[in-house]
Length: 197
Image (tube, rainbow, N blue to C red; front, side, top):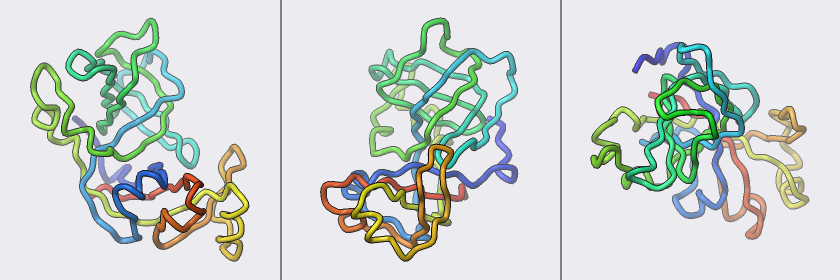
């Protein structure tokens, strides 16, 4: 794998409030060890065979890399290598794209929720086949999306930190509080801006 950490080592990663309610809140400065998962919005064959990755909106990345179907051992699961590794469970290849081919893809990044340890490739645990899929992270910044009235009320005094191309408003916070930030019934959306260590 060729990946220049000096060129790209900050990642904007989606994190839902429901996930934090289960696995624990995050503060700016926290460090942890985790795997990336992805959810793609577009995938097409790529003429380029140069791996690349760039952020095109607050939470959307575009990458060129190799896509692998590892469903045989796991049920529908894809593995993407664009210079970093990420996997997607419950995902299949679109028609016309073969496993191992280069693709251009737009996708969201999310942290794994303990499923990675169960994944296999050719009968072996994936973490043994590709141990470098697990990265060390440090939270550099946290953004919260302000959607509903309770969120607007709770964070009214904070300035807008970012507005997405779809008009979504994000504000900067120092720590998550998934049970309180936007109410018990609201699935709060955060962006964790993390440095790969």
